[in-house]
Amino acid sequence: MKILVVEDDEGTAEFISTGLVARGHAPIVARDGREGYERATADRYDVVVLDRMLPELDGLGVVALMRKDGVSTPVLFLTNLSGVDDRVDGLEAGGDDYLVKPFAFEELMARLTALARRPTLGASQTLLEAGDLEMDLVARTVRRSGETIDLQPREFRLLECLMRSEGRLVTRKMLLEQVWEFHFDPKTNIVETHISRLRGKIDRGGPALIQTVRGAGYTFRAPNSAA
Image 1: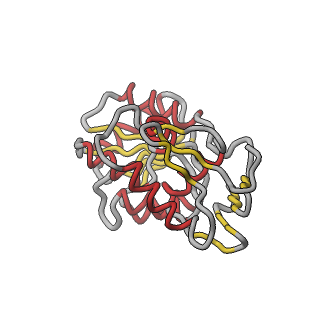
Image 2: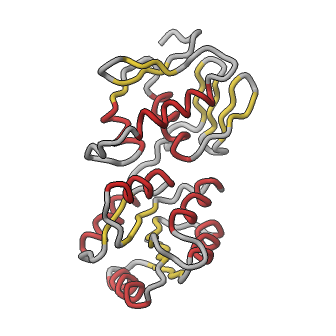
């Protein structure tokens, strides 16, 4: 695998890169957030290992800019910050997994391998349509009645998940797992907040597309859909 390691601590960067080389991988090391962002957007990588606390540009800023630029490379956050809120912040910004320092290299390797082989949500289809709503998974654009809708990376993934399950119930647990990669309940209103923001953007000037199923989850259905 070709892996970008964005880590300003020399010892940690050396530990990771040495281990990766020993296992036949090709690590590229960036020493600050600005360099990490530039490398991540200038070349293709299988996965990015990204420290949270970086000079020039912090990890959250790096991944947010990557997603804004349409770079979908999986990102593993590596950090000393271990609180639930810290994990939520990292995943909301566009990260895919989270590993707290200190860590065992074998766990890091297992997580990187899992991220690299994980299929993207849009692997089998590049255009989703429901009524007058259109989502282009390659261009990373969303339009309704021809009008472009500006979505944040997590809102985009949330809408994609809902559109792929059009007409079927999607539970809160399913959204936490598929959109945030949470296999635990963070005990926050993260899903409800993002659903509310998404509704405010896609339903403006048109019929509501996302319906709440009280006590169960959500359904997505376009008014003229037969699903």
